[in-house]
Image (cartoon, rainbow, N blue to C red; front, side, top):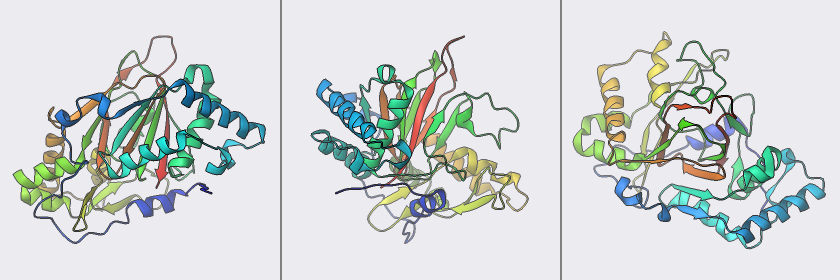
Amino acid sequence: MMVRMVVAFGEQTTRYFDRRHIGVPTAVPLGPAAWRAADVADSRRWMVHLGDSQIAELEDAYAAAVGSGRRMSGLASSDFELLSLAEEVAAWGKEVSDGRGFVVIRGFPVERWGIAQTEYIYWAIGQHLGRPGAQNPKGDLLGHVVDHRDSGDLDAVRAYRTARFIGYHCDGADVVGLLCLVNSARGGLSRIVSSVSVFAELLHSHPELAARMCEPFALDLRHDTDDVKHLQVRPVCHDGRSVRTFFDSDCFRSADRHESIEFDPIDIAALDAWEEIANRPEMYLEMDLKPGDMQLLSNHTIAHARTAYEDVPDGPKRHLLRLWLTV
């Protein structure tokens, strides 16, 4: 019987960055994760629509789990039994981990369920996909992406707590999931790019900058109250068979606010070139997540960004639930 629990922040980050690297590849091994915009223009290739019977199965599992006294915080996969949907959920996970690196599942009736039931079911699905993990040193396991109007030094503010544009980044876990509860009045588009394809193009056009991306960069942790201010992270790892990537535009670039970090011109050139390629319209896919849409992304082969947005005046704020998963 499959049972999942949770993984601590430090363990999750360590496992995520535990990547074998043998050196700069002469060519990038291509596969389904190396896509461009034209390859995924048809949403039927990556969007799954839930049917009434599947929603009913989730609601039955929820009723049984709650009826047994299972609280969300102590829920394991074995406490939330999936029948016909189990194979479908496994297919979502396989597509994210071994396929194109992303999938969107549409049709969760979040307005009918309300926040508490949606959180519970979302958490349970996460347990079937992997081990949910802490998203910060405080141990928060289920994130709420809402504009809190945080202000101050933008190098230290957590961008997801604002409505501003968020540049390309990855999160410190194998998979990130976002479930939309409320969307915005304008903007807030999710932009994703195959970081495998971006690196392949960089290797072709600027091999010297691609080589720099295979060496460590300082990553600003933005936890200024902690003793550790930054980490050395290798953006691209090549193990001889595949390429796995990590990119965080804001946190790479803000690392030089720390006295011990100083950028070389090639550092900036490599980051600029990576983003220039990733922002070409022929490279990325944009999607407007609607209430009830769940997006799953691989942080090893996909980088994601978000356009700036405006909430409905005097209405409910744009609100997404976020899961980090170790698989």
